[in-house]
Length: 531
Image 1 (cartoon, helix red, strand yellow):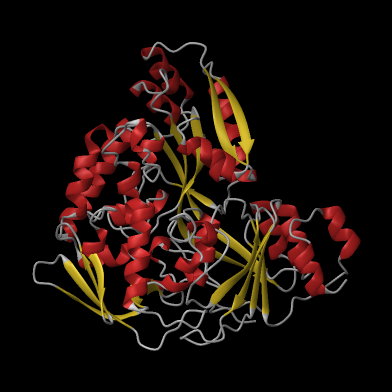
Image 2 (cartoon, rainbow, N blue to C red):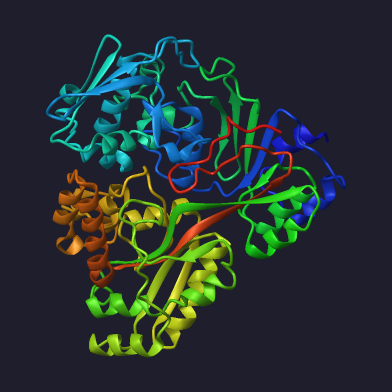
């Protein structure tokens, strides 16, 4: 079996299979990028619906946006993409974009302002999980046709009030900002779904790649767009293989059967770094590891219990052992590097303090369930907490499932405790303040799954109003102070136990150049990669 066929037919591989089929050393084709990564969280490719980590990686490489984050110059912030320029009205409420001429979708259809208006309107009308990113500007299914509209090669976006232009543009860099081919999408629409069913497994973009196939829990295959307006990518095909085990990813990398391994644990990172032909690259991500206590639970909703859980985490012990080099202690909802980020980490592993708080709440003999995605480091964090909780008389039952299974229960408010990760959608503090500390309607009927506070059944304790004030503040220093004040109160009252911020370590063959996972502000980019 040649290397190419082997790559396509084995998506998840164990050590026994590796030994049976792989020669002592192989090499991926020069024009192909092969990545081992956990991609079981992908549920859809539709940019109006996709809201998971691996799905964002796909979208970033398939769809252009009005503005984008340049993977080779992330510090510069947003740059023109499908919009070549923009102007802001005197009242600060309307941004008028001039569309770039001569760009085509992969169907051959021209990219028009009409397509951009349709894409953003569609995301609001479908009202899937990420719709709140656009909805925070006052867009509703009823008014969006008037607030987002096209006129020739101009696109006008009018918000309900004045916001900093940078905030509006940063939001448009999110996955939901992907511009789709209206003609192709509507030709595949069924039962008024605006193409949602078709776009779950197909793409209609103008980006550097198109989707060839997505096999859930197995692989994603992309092929390059030779007519991409910035130039055809050097990697003509990208294959992302779902490989859950760190040891399997390392073995594939050392044998040369993949170019990049994205989920090696610290032990395998150390081992791989000693191998010839392999390099390790670190990037501080915006991803936070946290636990969320269900506010509907009669015991977990008590303020003293919430705080007690924050003292049952062995932050330093985990950071210095099985998370070494890959996570750093961080106890605030704004990641380091973000405007308004706080470096206050007041909680430490303190069993006696936790006992005092639980006694004050009158808690005895508590038994709870924690839902965890099937990922090694998350399971180990759960087990560490399980052991600590046992010391204060709390029995923790850990339920391990696929990302899709666990997230579905979390979004349905069906878990006592969720243990997982959250990453920013766009590089502005509102991206996390507006989900961790914002929940204007805590009723079940609201079904506001985009808000983590809602998923947790927490009414945000009066912080929603403060978040609303912070997002419209135009004075930078005042805005920083407002977010730091919100985070201080959040640490004291919230049901969220924020523990760590991720440092992603990518192990790769040393001939791979220009690969980035997006640092703290965006997702992975494949089109700059060369070998």
